[in-house]
Length: 295
Image (cartoon, rainbow, N blue to C red; front, side, top):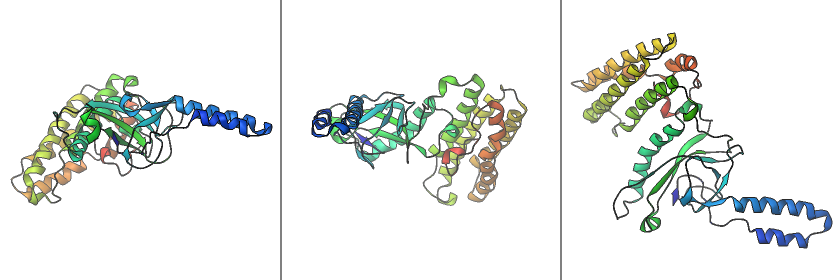
C-alpha cells in the first residue's frame, strides 16, 4: 500500500539477534542487554501489516517520508505515537487500477468525511496533526486490495491519547459540529480551480449554492439549541447564508464579488468562538488551516 505519510519498511528488529548479543557482553552489561532485548521483542510483537489496520489503531511507522508501506508498530494510544487510524473505506473502481492520481482524488474527498465521524471537532486536534492516508498500489490492486485507511498523523514528533471523541459528545455538540463540518465540506469540496471569478463564474456560483444549502442546514440545526451565544451565531450565519445566496444568483462577476466578500466574512471562524465555548467545544482557532472556515 502507499502512504502519504512516513515510509515504513518490512524490516523489523530481530529478536534472535538481540538475544544472542547478550552472550557477547560482560556481566556488567547483561542488564542493559536484557532490557534492550525486551524492548526489541516488544516492538516485533507489535508489528502488523498495513493491510490489517483497523479504525482506532494507534501506531508508529518505521522510516521516513512518503512511499511504500508494509508494516506498522501498533501501540496503546496512551503511549506516544505518530498516527491513529480514524477512518476507512473501500474503492469501487472495477478490475482495472484507476491510477495514483485517481485514487488520491478519491482519498482527498472521502478521508475528511470519514475522519469527522471519528473526531468531529477538528479544532480539538493537537497542533501539527494532519490528515494522511494509506491507499492501494498498482501491485496490491491486482491481489484485490481496495482499502483506504485514513489517519491523523503528527507531521513532527508524536502525540498521546486517542482522537476518538464522537462517542463522548453531547447531542447539541454533535448537532453543531455536523452543521459546521457540512459548511466546511461545501466550501472546500467545491473550490473552483480558477483563481479569478470572471474566469469561471459558473463554478463560483456552484460553490456559493452548495455553501448556501449547507448554511441553511446548519442554521436549522442551531435553532434547536439553547444559549445566548448560539443564538447570536445562528443570526449571523443566517445573514451569511443570504449573502451566499446572492452570490449564487449573481448575474455577473462584479455582482458576485460584492456578495461574496460579505458572505465569506460571515463565516469567519472567530465569530463562532463564543458559541463553541458555550457548547463546551474547543475554542482555539487552528492557525492557517482551511477547515477553520467552517462557521
